[in-house]
Length: 429
Ligand SMILES: *[C@@H]1O[C@H](CO)[C@@H](O)[C@H](O)[C@H]1NC(C)=O
Ligand SMILES: *[C@@H]1O[C@H](CO)[C@@H](O)[C@H](O)[C@H]1NC(C)=O
Ligand SMILES: *[C@@H]1O[C@H](CO)[C@@H](O)[C@H](O)[C@H]1NC(C)=O
Ligand SMILES: *[C@@H]1O[C@H](CO)[C@@H](O)[C@H](O)[C@H]1NC(C)=O
Ligand SMILES: *[C@@H]1O[C@H](CO)[C@@H](O)[C@H](O)[C@H]1NC(C)=O
Ligand SMILES: *[C@@H]1O[C@H](CO)[C@@H](O)[C@H](O)[C@H]1NC(C)=O
Ligand SMILES: *[C@@H]1O[C@H](CO)[C@@H](O)[C@H](O)[C@H]1NC(C)=O
Ligand SMILES: *[C@@H]1O[C@H](CO)[C@@H](O)[C@H](O)[C@H]1NC(C)=O
Ligand SMILES: *[C@@H]1O[C@H](CO)[C@@H](O)[C@H](O)[C@H]1NC(C)=O
Image (cartoon, rainbow, N blue to C red):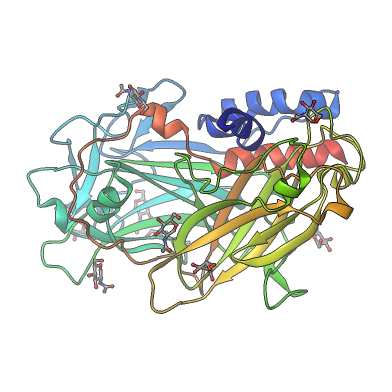
């Protein structure tokens, strides 16, 4: 049962994507062939920056070359209090297979800033933190904020609490931010004022320009997402003045009810099955949810073969999801559907589960009582310029095992999947 399940629900190509632009292209090629049949348009990001903080010169890694921030145009010493920062080595090597950018850090008790001269448009930004001891400083004092332009991306952020919570000593934080015309993007790290001896550090910064029309319609327009729930029929507008945090999750098994059958005969039984995924998210933010589908089972060929319902955060998002119909009455067409959902502040809980549940439509609507989902992307939308959420509560457990590269790979990288889906959408048109 598990095997069948995995095969149809979470194809390994979504789960094991590597991070480099090269992979975006390769991946897209693979996916596009059966879809378009022709030669796809390949996206070449205008900017790809891999900045290895605390290092100098260039450091080739397996899929990319990192450039050190020492004497770099991105780290001007006359800006902010950059000259008060220092470079530092970790007290021990990370357990990741890929050691770069974790073998160096830039660290300071004062504010420091990077500056990037970028073309206008949407940028994907990823911060790499390796939580360990540097210069014998107290790890629990690494409390800091990170801003990019006018956006607060992280605030009062504790790398130690984040590492303990995720049980990973390497931490990624990923964002999408729009850069206006003729503006440098300044990324600033500020140690928290609330703690004596607090400091900030960073190991690596990655910036990649994103294609237009990926999550935002175009350079000027707004994209409207159906808002699920009580406010049914209402739309949520995403504009260039919004920043997003991409939600990457270990795809450790997150399907909590792995009971769905694929192509079972017993519709009565299937009708009562439900597939649910739970994603812990910060309260009091709006989230964009992009669901990816593609029907490729031989039995599912025409509209009405497999019709199902989709609930997001316990609220109806679709009553008649029919992937074949969405693909223009054809099978093998990858499609995605976007939704917005607001997670209120419930009983002062820091986090809530954003659930995605699928279950078959009533038997008269569908030939097979079944459901399908191929991939999920979730984005947090800024609240008045801030994406910062609270730290997780301290746990009594300490970090026992670090992550390794094979774990890292199992992260759904929104930009990668997103780039793919946008091309697919283009080629379908
Ligand atoms: C750092 O820069 C500031 C202002 O640019 C300057 O006042 C200060 O003396 C510099 N400190 C060092 C250690 O160079
Ligand atoms: C910092 O130095 C650069 C190059 O020397 C110069 O162009 C820039 O204006 C300086 N910035 C400040 C804030 O002094
Ligand atoms: C970025 O920092 C530089 C140097 O402090 C400053 O001149 C520039 O105005 C800043 N850019 C933005 C967009 O804030
Ligand atoms: C951007 O999208 C909006 C709404 O879809 C549209 O009206 C506008 O013409 C588009 N602008 C450009 C430059 O494509
Ligand atoms: C469906 O039912 C038929 C007859 O009862 C049986 O032969 C067949 O193996 C079943 N198929 C599946 C997929 O369970
Ligand atoms: C959804 O329903 C479950 C079970 O009733 C509940 O535990 C959970 O808090 C609900 N989630 C939201 C966002 O209301
Ligand atoms: C979210 O769901 C998981 C798995 O069902 C559960 O362990 C966890 O306690 C839930 N978290 C919240 C905040 O409800
Ligand atoms: C900063 O985070 C710590 C740990 O979660 C928390 O105890 C503290 O209240 C936070 N401070 C602020 C100002 O939010
Ligand atoms: C990485 O993790 C995988 C899965 O947890 C495990 O099988 C593998 O042995 C680990 N590799 C290293 C080098 O620790």
